Length: 244
Image 1 (cartoon, rainbow, N blue to C red):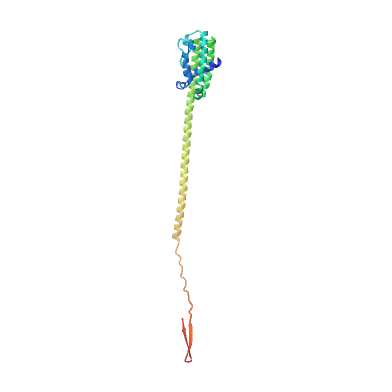
Image 2 (tube, rainbow, N blue to C red; image 1 turned 90 degrees about the horizontal axis):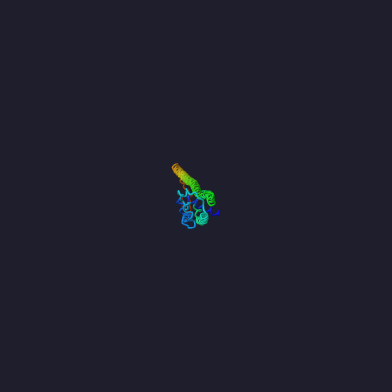
């Protein structure tokens, strides 16, 4: 019975303390709501809150009776059916509820277990049970709301930090790109200046150059050749010289 009480009350605590938007997706919540029409739990109608999220009415807060045997049997059925309902939402709660909320529900179900055990054993009247249960629900609802608010604040802060970090990274990237562009521009300007300097130097060298006079070669002297031919005519020698 202890295990059943724990699990049932955990489900009830979820319904009491978690926002309607979140609880609406938990299959356990609809199951717990259906317990209000379960015939085996009918003896508890009007004596304790059976519908998730509801509050005790004046009759519940003014019933000084302790559970009869029939009502204790109904409490047992409530616990058994509650365990079944709780199991329906195991996967949903594991993925949807923040760990800090789960921890608070674990804490609250131990407090509720104590109350139900005291009601079952006759140590509490229905009035006392309903008053103490409502007080416990209110306290844990406030603690869970504070925990959720803290989570939202932390999430907002984390998002702001991430945005600031991203903005800083983008600023650094733009600065690095601008610096790289400036370095590239300086390099290109230096190369252009060197080219201009070399070109100007070449032009200067050409303008400073004077034509060199090269004297024509001296005339070549060709030696003159003379030929002398002699012949006899009337017993006389005649000679003729040709050439310069």
